[in-house]
Length: 109
Image 1 (cartoon, rainbow, N blue to C red):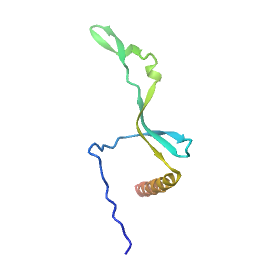
Image 2: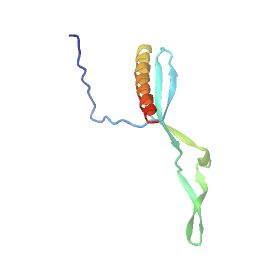
Image 3: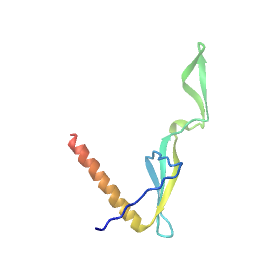
């Protein structure tokens, strides 16, 4: 019988993070660089509100940065660099899980 057991080792600070996007490409060594990010609305450094009838207004009249309403940020927490073979294997592995999710969602319709 041919079999092998794979044990996983986790660092004490292992803590998965949520990502909703990636940025990257192929580096000069022919490896794929993937930088994972969380895209979200920008948070102001400060905001100024008008006071009327002893109440703070709902809408800000000024903010820092001034283009806050037209801004978003991409927080990059980590990334990976993979070679061609690993990229192919990851593609196949991820594709298999996507197929399973699609089968499950088709069953719910």
